[in-house]
Image (tube, rainbow, N blue to C red; front, side, top):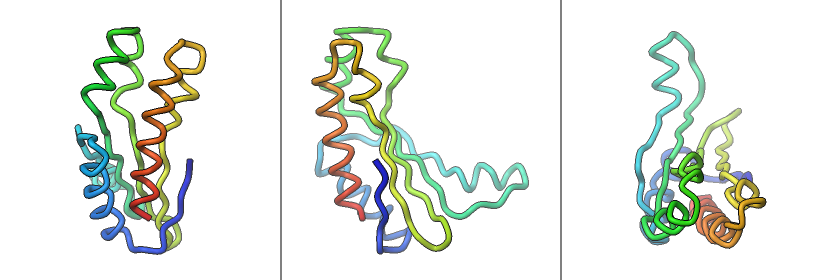
Amino acid sequence: MKYESKDNFDSVIKKMHESVTRHGMRIISIINVRENLERFGYNIMNNMIFELSRPDLVYSLINTDPDMTIILPVRICVYELQHAVYIITQDVKETLENTGLIKIGDEIDKIINEIAMDSI
């Protein structure tokens, strides 16, 4: 899913942190894409990737099918483009559609989309 925020980038990032905690998720890492690209001489507007996890869902997913480890952690990206701020979420349910794990994917999608909507 893709969402557009009326707030500035820093406000969205702050709200994202708060919403992640409120939804019982944990931030595994935050990748600052802009800073990483600047080290190689490229300039882009603000762009951050939040890698998120919720231990009980990860445990269920891995115990059911260890191959699903490849889709973890789930990601939410916040970026600026032409002075607008966007949030995009990973579609976990679609990834798990043919695995019999669609219920877990649906729950993860619901959570990360609520986090995104809380942050706009």
